[in-house]
Image (cartoon, one colour):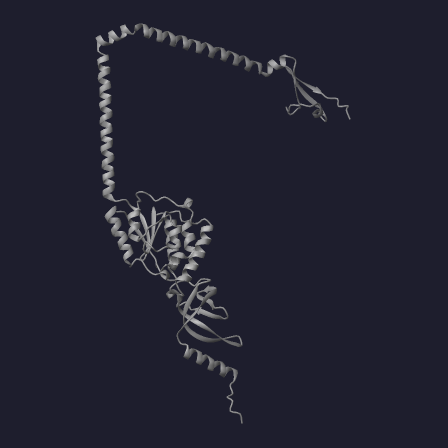
Length: 398
């Protein structure tokens, strides 16, 4: 009798399932993400040069992912293997708990490819940048409500130039960060309650900034009508949000310094303007006072009499020249007016009819300009300069 073990298909499938799930309870799989489909759960495949592995992240786990799975990302997917029956065929897949980028090079590659694409579309062009208001009445901020960033921004603005601030709380890392920031931009854009918007988060690693490189977020910032300041990470950290924003601040604190002027500097500027204006006004009135003093002396009875006596002949000459010029212009205008009147009289229809012309109309008073228009007419009206008569037409032409 043979010693080869015997199994039914179901038994073998069950045994395989137990072997896989017990021996691969938690593993990390390296591969490139492809075929991403989001239906509450997130389905995708991991591939390398030779093979493909199905993967799924259940909806309960999706909110805790470090970032949103995207086509072409090279990652380490952490999870456990599980088998399942698909129709009559048993297969296996990776149930993903977390995703980490394979390395800085993979992130940089994805960043460069997306940057090139969006730049080619013109989303980063300087021509589209909006100017920041000099003194905003209200400032919007999108960031975490619990981090140190919002407190740094509030404190800095309060110290420089106290201005009302409206916070839209949002996640600044993780799979939902981009979506929540987009919702914040839409809220401020629709409410029109602010004059300028700051999008901020503190420092971190490259993986922490993935949400700020998502294409949907870049396009939403580009379409926003409110000027936007990006303040992500530290001075050396760059995201696609920095390129599309109207102004990029090196840090959240720097954004607070950009968005409002320093009160003391503004007061000193106003003081200088006031002093310059005061000096100009005093100089002007001094000049006016000097001129009035001269006029006052001139209007003194003796001085005025002496002035009129000395300039009597000059004043007479000026008056004669002015009178002659005025009368000559008046004569020319009267002649032009008379000629214009004659031209208007010449255009009068009655004067034209007096010269032997007449106007022919049909019974509907429509002017007949051509003999061909007489065809089919029974009666016509003929207007002379002194009266209008009606004629019957004998139309004997073919």
